[in-house]
Image 1 (cartoon, rainbow, N blue to C red):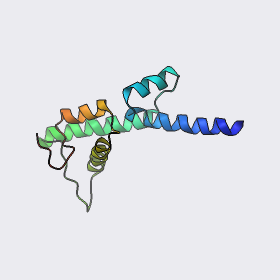
Image 2: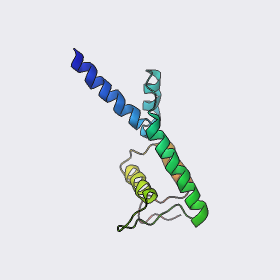
Image 3: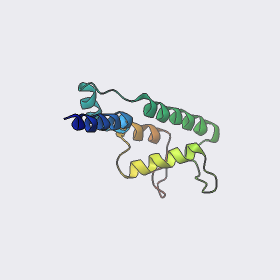
Image 4: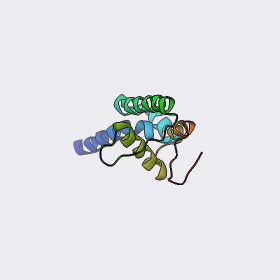
Length: 111
């Protein structure tokens, strides 16, 4: 029935939006089936990643204090990445990228 296709289309759309966050073997399986990443999600992550690199170069650290009064978009993004890491849904590639900049994922973690 047509309703099944609607459910499938929504599911595929959700997978495309999450493609950059999926673990590698799931991403490979979806690509094998012809599902390609929605560029918007991947583009946003890469843009923030590059912004974080510049921040680390300028300030000597990638760990950004999160101000509760007026958090910057970059600190909001970084805190979200840490949250995803703690829940084991960030993905190995992204985790390694952030670790390469010595991002601390837990409050008592030190480099």
